[in-house]
Image (cartoon, rainbow, N blue to C red):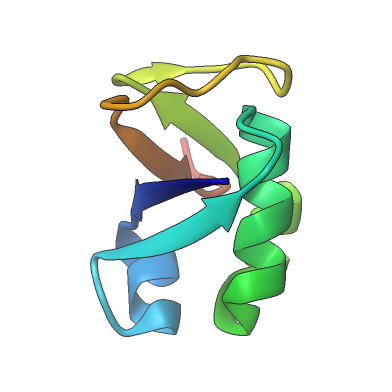
Length: 81
């Protein structure tokens, strides 16, 4: 089991009422973090379903492994032009 801090911005931070949350994961991949985020923080469930994670400031694929010390940020959908 690994504890991971996920940074939040914009509407996701407003929904959670803070700028970051901790999640406990067994599957330390981006996909596993998003699943755990939705389960452990219900206010972020809809965001986690459509968002991506940035790991160390780079958008990352679902299968990317998370390592101790990585910086994670939830990147929600953005629209506009």
